[in-house]
Amino acid sequence: MNRKEVISSIRSIKHRCEIPIMLRAVGVKNICEVGVDQGANLKLLATADPKYLVGVDVWLNGIPKKVRKFVKNSKCKIRLLHMYSKKAHKYFGNEFFDYIYIDANHKEKFVAQDIKMWWPKVKKGGIFAGHDFTTINYGVKRAVRAFVKNNKLVEFFHVVSGDSAKSWIALKRI
Image 1 (cartoon, rainbow, N blue to C red):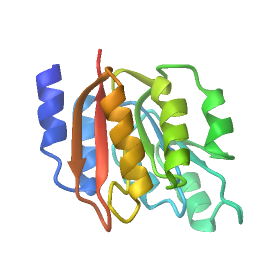
Image 2: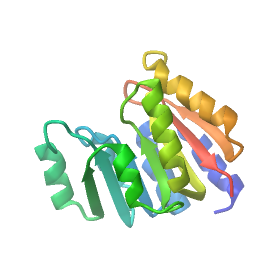
Image 3: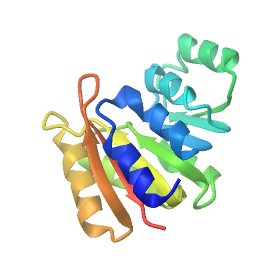
């Protein structure tokens, strides 16, 4: 798929639940979600048929039973990292992931920190995205806007609706 087709595929997304369809269409293989919580989006991302799916969360009360059950029964290879994202990002080389979705701590300084740590882990031409691009979680919106404004490697930026909040999607320049 050429760049225009990738951008068109991203632009066509109207709701977060359509993201895996786009990921499958563009051939994404390595996916990471930072901030898994109860695993709803991790399950959604698994429908993109990735080669490798990573879920990162601190899970203060332990990994939820339903997340463990899903991982055990999943057809794709899933690795859960039960730790803070600032530690987890060190487990992967730069440009390892085709797609990363940020949905962890929503305070501006933590979103900015996650963006700074995880952006290098996205391959050139890869997709970097996240959740809660809303005025309710304005820290997310501010951190993401600053990232897009100050980063020359963002080729394309798009916002889509979601369950209770919008998702943002950035395409990394080749």
